Length: 115
Length: 114
Image 1 (cartoon, chains in turn orange, red):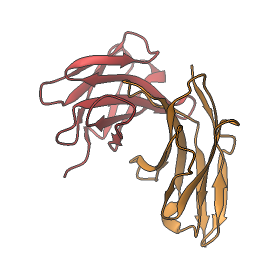
Image 2: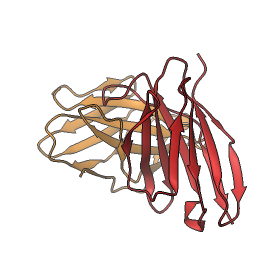
Image 3: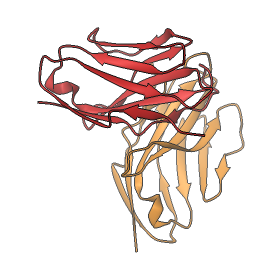
């Protein structure tokens, strides 16, 4: 069984600053995908960024980047130039490579971006 | 292209009743997964349907069931509701089953059990 741990229940960052959200996971799988999802107060969950475990290069999507440390089973999300619209719950999620679509989520980090 | 839609958005039921929630996937998507989101347990996988067949099931009692129709729309049913079933129920659709397919989430149905 896989587990995903997000140790920061809440974080706050000022607009234009950089913030890093932490995520660790535990699995015996060698191939898998890791995700960061954003759930704004409107509740619709959207994919922020995806990382394939066999790729050593860290994924980047505009202001969002990850630091993927496979040996340490760590997958942190860095948000640069934070914007008010980044205020949301952020969930780290895991799925082993294969034919299933079952995502395992962490407990989430509530990020507040302030002026 | 329209996103994933879920109906109803809000629902209030009493203990012992049953409820049916509906999810319409993005056009062309054939896989639908359901998740339960609660403050205490977080996001938990309920089940996945692909081509009208249940492909995976999470660790939920048999009161939770689902089905998928030929047009890929999916319903989930909860019978004999308990207070602990109060939650946000999210569905997600993807082109096909499999970890490489991105899942797109709907806005959710907020179920309150009194």
